[in-house]
Image (cartoon, rainbow, N blue to C red):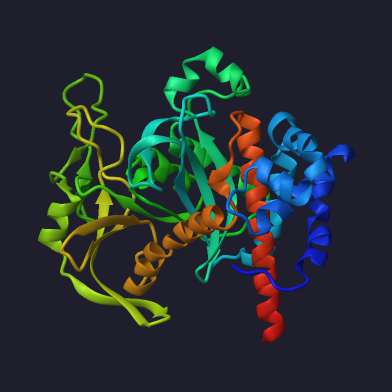
Length: 398
């Protein structure tokens, strides 16, 4: 995104509700300066380079505001959610769950561990942030970035204390952090109609069930080994035997098959076009079939019973590789709508790239829990301001 001439004049006005949410008036001068530093050109967007560009004489105050002070980001996050919702929210919007890695050296930065780093495409020393992105019409904006703490951190109280991790923070898998973040944005009245996620989240039945319990459709990646039943699978309770206790484990009249096996047996690949791109119609080869995933309660034999009906989707890539998805969209949903939902997830990758390359999301050099989350929040605010400018310019041009 590029800002237009005169954008500085509107920044202070746009930031007013965020500054009000900071509470202590002594903090108000530093947030606009830091956001300004994130927006201005520069190779590095960490505290020292930002201070040298926007407030050379106030480097200590900026460092204290971002990295040392323990101000609560929650009220500011609420303002961010509401501002992004004003621009992108609606029943046709998607909420995209993903994570993004911040490569790091050393062992002292909060949450750093040898783990999968999407930015590098391999296992590496990094921090991992669970991200929530609101997107509509392929336009994304971040509404949540929360650090994932591996057990190597949560099991080491002294290490957490040095990084100023709040005592209330315990180990949570990424899918549980994501559900907590979804509850937070829902409390801020963010509007969306469907939740999207890759297989890192979608393969988890607890995550999918959590979305359904919250009343939302979802379209998520899964593993090819995820077991499926046919949509009309028969389930019955065994007859009572004599005067003993009734049996509580139902009988399932078929054995589940893996997603890969189910597609090969029950589905045919067809060409599906889901929208127009800049170079023409976007199309791909998809096999789509109605199923009941084997993610219900576990039977006495160790087999999971059929869950709620869903769409099983297999995408065949040009090199012959396959990707698998599950979608809870209604049985009446068209193939185009199902594929469009699956493909809308790419918008979060665009957001991550822009936040890092243009705004320095991955440039923070502090080590503390609060410092990292303050930097991430201010980066999201800068991103939302650029989106505000973009939409305002498009509206004016129209």
